Length: 409
Image (cartoon, rainbow, N blue to C red; front, side):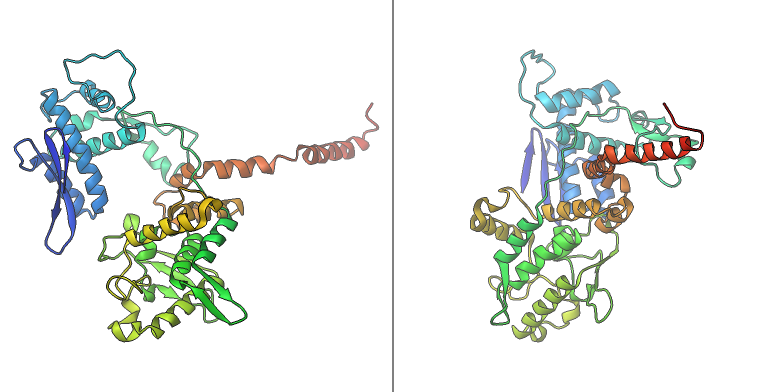
């Protein structure tokens, strides 16, 4: 697959072992050595193929900009880095000066991501003596208004690096969520318990996926990467699952590569037990050499039997549920909405932000605060909403204190 970007190309590559990666080809159809060196650095660091692909697209645009404006990659000035942002918005060459308002080619969040990739590349090449890498950042001291890490006072002595060229991103909107009733409707559309017959009707596997995402806040890739040995049933104790970074045949990953342990409720654990029973009845324990190391979510119908589920298969299921449920659930809901719903429910219940952050697998609690600031703000506002009750407490305290000195006029 080739993605054109003017005189540059983003080329998909299949490496030995069947893995997919990406590189940037110049106008001569050869890899751009400077870019490829940096992309290889990302691969060695264990960055996901999607990250490499995104950075390759950004750097292909940067190389096209350098070509159009006849700039040397290792001799550009900060003003020309700023010009890259203007070019991303307009696409105009050096001989064009348009004063007519036009829609931008890319949204500001995309432009910000493209700039971040370019700056990251130059930050890497700074180690090889490229001077611009140092000029892209300045040392600043921490300011108030944001969460400060535990050892912030150490960094404050020497300052933190802050980007000089930045994109003003639009105010983040509240992440979309599903209500408990909508989540239950999605689950029931997959499988329901027939109490009269004492059997499940429908696909327990499909229901287990949605119930798992809603009850744990897992990302879809993390759920598809679960193996049976990662699921620890209760047996008298609290059941839990382990999120373990490992290679997957379809490339799904644990974002950030961090292990974490998540406790789950008994209903979810019982549903998993029913699903395993159905798998064994279908012969999974006989056709799989080691059921413990087999993936939890596998094909039961079309495709290779008991093969790991693909993300595309899940999105096909989402499309079917969209058609089946019509206007009963939001038209644009995706599996990731379950994660947002889980986090919002925890915060509304008063769970501390740092606990929610660890459960979601965020590398920094600031990410949780940025994503769900509206939830914590609402909770704080509700805490002081009953102004009358608060002021009654103040008057009672005042009256008690003044009673010792005599009646107030």
